[in-house]
Image (cartoon, rainbow, N blue to C red; front, side, top):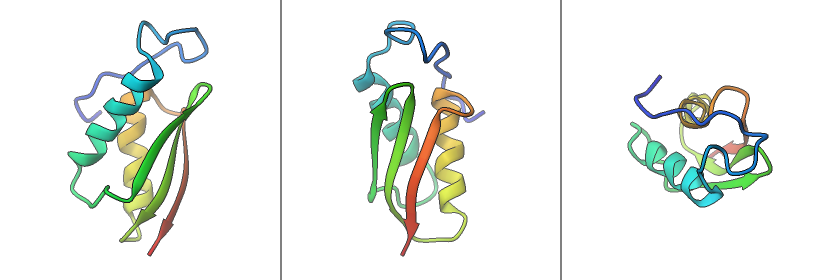
Length: 85
């Protein structure tokens, strides 16, 4: 856990009062606070899932980005389409 509250009940409308925009902003903030360059990662919402797309620089950054996002929205609710440059 990275100190960010996890959103639960993803299948429920409103995700406990959190809009898609709020969820996206929370994940983006967590990624920007991380110890790697997250400027080339785009965060979007598709149904109950957070989608991470874009590019990372180092080998372990894909896993780290997923871990950070899951710290916000919960394990199993993140899909990554990240490539290493």
